[in-house]
Amino acid sequence: EDKQTILEIKVTLGLILGEVLHEGRAPVAFLQDEARRLDRYWPSICDDTKEAIEHRKNTSGILRGMRVNAERLRNLFRATEPLAGGKRGKPRYFNPNQIIFDSLKLFKSKMNKMGISTSHKAADEVVDILGHREDLATAVTNIMDNAIFWLNYHDVHKPEITIALTRE
Image 1 (tube, rainbow, N blue to C red):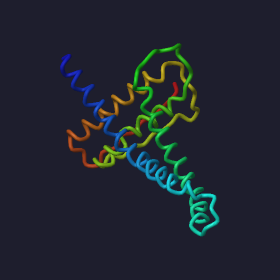
Image 2: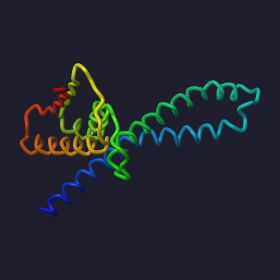
Image 3: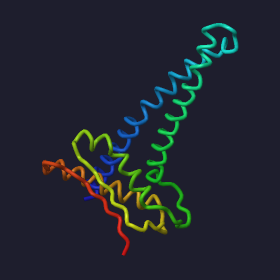
Image 4: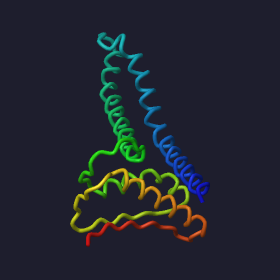
């Protein structure tokens, strides 16, 4: 049983790492390419040539794209951060919906590849809960991983995962 648990943990970790690599490659490549482009522009950016004027026009678009891609990376890191473990502080209030959305993002490309649709239904009155974000993130990640496995294992015709958050 311990070997099975270790295997499941490794599979989940591999899945998460795969998603981080998949989702992170494009923003990192964009940032690298545009930084190189800005490096080329920099020596003559203040010149009074047609080329320098064109470079100055392009710069705001480049910076806007860099901000968008930096935000994509920040969201990716935010989604994976609770799974990293580390020191636990006191329980805090947090919005469970954000944890659920972030966990869904981790499996997005795998679910798309497998044709699995998802829906997330929040309670009418969303209330912050008291606890550790990482506990909920770990639980939702494990549930998602298991749901994806079993939907694939049973070859479900129109696979769908529905998450409903209710308050009792």
